[in-house]
Length: 330
Image (tube, rainbow, N blue to C red; front, side, top):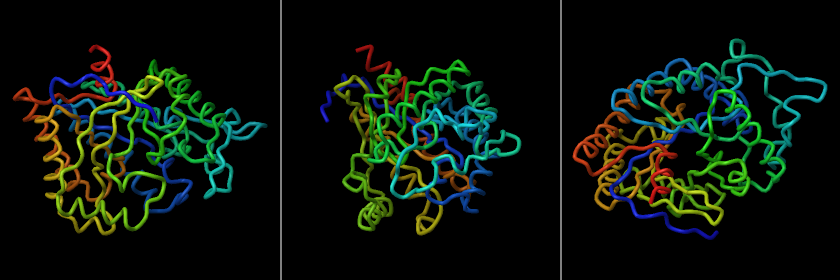
């Protein structure tokens, strides 16, 4: 893939992007499994508010890359089925219709599938938040089963849904970080996307045990996460790769002290400030659902570190689209 470096940065940058999807991110893998169902309930009822409160306290502009179906307050099936305007993907691991589990209800009856009130809350937040896109229904763009027709019809619905809120979608995060159909993003006016973390274990489609263990080793040793520089794709889209995921306290990861995650993020922030690069932290709001106090304490510590660097003038805290605007000004 041909890329071109964006202009050099005048100071370091910290950016936070969120994969905001409620139940849509796991339906094809786990259906409505109780664990994810419960996590999404907590996300909806508590986590979004707590994140906004934290961002307001420290004046942090997050980038909420949102599944387009959450812009709806209701939907229904008609004679042509559910969301007939979207060409279905043909992912090998999912044989049902992509919208088979869509209840075709409303935000009151099926709150994990709809999020109009949450979008309005984020949009009207005192500290301006960016609302970007995470596809309409979590189709995996980088998979061979996602045709250009499927990607185009999905993106078209995202843009249409956001326009009803007066929102221009600029930033995109690919479901499962599987990049694909960049030309279609450009076609619909997107300006930037989050590329994969530039570590060997985050590259490619497979997530083998070896890769997972390598990632885990970096965390338990508090190895410095990569800082990044934005790069323009040949079609003009700006790639702002991720640096580090703030992962949840579950499975083996529950035994990793929060202090190590905070320490690792601090190393990334310090390097970004020192080398005039970007530290790009990302996570799903559901990551904050269990052991929430511990998770929020860790995120608060990371943000405090960033704010101290901002106060001494060596770091900016920007949304993804603000980074793009900064690059275009040079």
